[in-house]
Image (cartoon, rainbow, N blue to C red; front, side, top):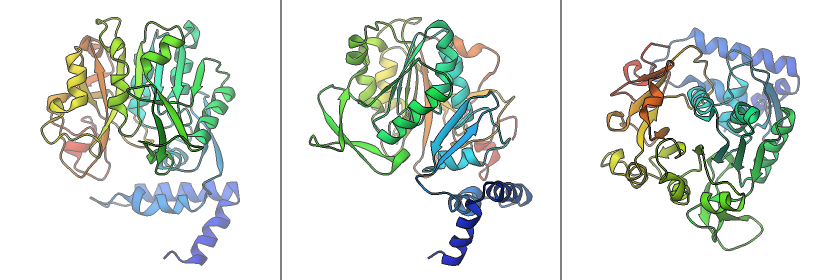
Length: 353
């Protein structure tokens, strides 16, 4: 059990903004000062100390280098690593390469669907990118408190083109779901209708009701419901190149059995059957400064998948030539998981950290 006196001391530091900021700076300096191969210092040492400075219901405000402002509840690794960002005003809130590629894929978009919008860490960046051409982000987040933060962040950044939605994206529009688990780790399970449940909707049904007949980008991070959501968008996936949406989605070993290769999973076969080419997106599941580094994409058949159960983001497009542009690099035989404490040949950007 943690020493109560130590927790009391940390809580006291957390009550004074200047003390807390100074303490976090010292912890970050400690991370740089030591060498601990194979040890995730952030997860096992410095991160828990920072967690002790905050309450779960505490609202934190932080600005990006672009001037984008976020408010968020301190309830997840997303919040912690954002608080511990270097530089203090980073260019993203969560997942540097994911944030960057989403803005790239959204250029010129009119309609974007996000499943698992959370407090808007990606939705706000996309909405800013497409606001000038009348684009709309349809942001689905069944967690009431996080949806409230999403709405607050839209307001903070003067964005009127985010449409927060309480439904869960699914393969039908008739099911009741409930969230099981805590905050960003919660997954949806079928349930009887009640106060803590929410309705499902398919992407196709929702957009038909909204009068949208073309979709430019789908973003899904919904803890295992990605396959169902994509099945509910089949009519859009069937469109030809140039009209079908680009897709970014998470796969996780807890929900997707890739023991026979990613290409043989149901979600991959659904997309390749519609003419998509799939890539693993190399990224930190964190806030980490990768400014100036190319976006590294791994062809689906060349992804290194070994290791404990883990998840990562994938990108699906019908015209792979979009990644011939500057700023992208196609790589092979490496992990999509950037991990500072693991083998650099597999888990670091090929140009080095």
